[in-house]
Amino acid sequence: MSIIRASRLGFDYIKYNDESEDAEKVKAISDISFEIEKGDFIAVLGHNGSGKSTLAKHINALLVPTSGTMWIDGVNTAEEDELWKVRQKAGMVFQNPDNQIIGTVVDEDVAFGPENLGISTEDIWSRVDEALGKVGMLGFRDRSPNRLSGGQKQRVAIAGVVAMRPECIVLDEPTAMLDPNGRREVLEVIRELNKKEGVTVILITHYMEEVIFADRVFVMDSGEIALEGTPREIFSKVDELKKLRLTVPQVTELAHELRKAGVEIPEGILTIDELVDALCG
Amino acid sequence: MLIELKDVCYTYGDGTVYEVKALDHINLGISEGEFIGLIGHTGSGKSTLIQHLDGLIKPTSGEVLFEGKNIWSEGYDLRSLRTHVGLVFQYPENQLFETDVITDVMFGPKNEGLTPAECEARAAAALRQVGIPEELYKVSPFDLSGGQKRRVAVAGVLAMDPEVLILDEPTAGLDPAGRDELLNQIRHLRDKRGITVVLVSHSMEDVALYANRLIVMDEAKIAFDGPPRKVFARYRELEKMGLAAPEITYIMHALRSRGLRVDTGAITVEEAKRSILMALSNRNSMKDGPL
View 1 (spheres, chains in turn purple, cyan):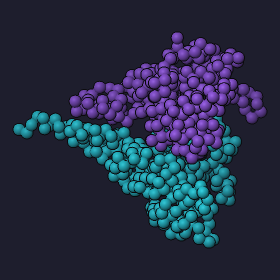
View 2 (spheres, chains in turn orange, red):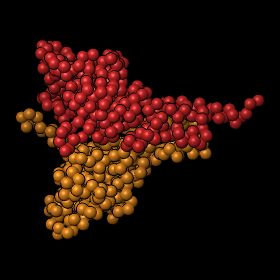
View 3 (tube, one colour):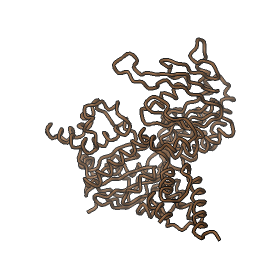
View 4 (cartoon, one colour):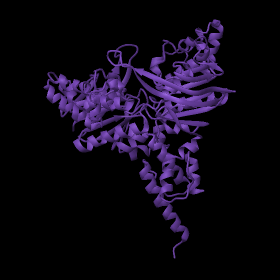
């Protein structure tokens, strides 16, 4: 059974003018359907305003559809009684770690989620240990979060979600504010959670290089899924992506340019090794 | 020399147990018309450094000079310095506050005491420079897309008509096209108006493409300062500082190690393409053998 299922999902924002009248409907998502299998790694691309974040917020019921239905592990997110169940199944990590960390000490911050589950203190701490271990931050447990680097802070934020033992984690541009090292750390943690723990991952990003590890890529445009496929299928469409205000990883772009100049190499090259083999093989 | 830092040190929480040295004997000169990329890992001192350039932070020791004058000397007009040196913070769209776009951009010039007509002319010019069309002037800034908001916020600083424009990660969170548009407009400003640009960025690809000088901060010191090609040639050392080179640099080194005689100093897709095409045609003519 699929872990996430959307059926003809639609969402309208309602915009009011200064006098709170003349409500105007703005379609953020229109009529999309998809299924995501347990353990999948899905990347979501799309320009600013394409509906990525609105879609992401439906996965843990921060928003509920204005038309159609969203199910998380068989639970309809629109059912108010099931809200906490949905939130526990699907955790969310945002762009700026500073806005997500509330504790004054790392392990207390991570404990915040499980504390709200009504489980024993012992269980809470074992979950905190486990979560910090999984993101490689156990050694920092009694530090103050504001003394950490961006990548470390974001890993703490991820640990806070992992401690809830979710089936699925949605990350909305988790690396946008990080330096190259921080980005690598966070991506490694995400991939490990996916591969070793079988956590379903939905990664929203503007960095094309981060997408090549995904099983499937959704490209959003004006509230719809414009393209869907494996990273190789998606990145073979260089010109189409550029029209959607996106791009491809540098290695893919270089290969594409070389092809246009008459060099015989395949389309959709994703890694440096592939390009080197194609040119020097 | 437009801006000069002489032996500048800055310590946060000086004299307390939480003392952190953020700048350690920095010597730096910035000339008119340069496009400087400033890189370094989180906490390396980049943000502290740029806040010294427009006098938001006073150095613990050392001197900051603008056009040869010490900005911390008695009677120096720091307010006017800030009209010469414009600073765009991270997520500047969080600072938008007015009811429509043009009024928001007029805020800076208004505080300079210009007439309403002058303010409007300045604001309109700044909005044109960042590519915001006139139809949007009367729209609420909060109804714009992320990329548009960011550009309106940059226009708010440009309306002050600065000679130096400092931007702290201006493209974080923008889609690839929005990123290219904003950086192209900034490059255009520099080419056309001779404005000096300091771009703080975590994207090695961006600084490779736009900057003509790269300053690398590490542990409160300047680790490297030079043309991007030369700095990225030391990518192994950059990696130790938590940084990297553009993906292109790694491609060129990998090709070279497999025997294709490409220029390992290429740092943009365009340069790499030219170098690879040339290397391939040389290899093919070698294969055919001399007659």
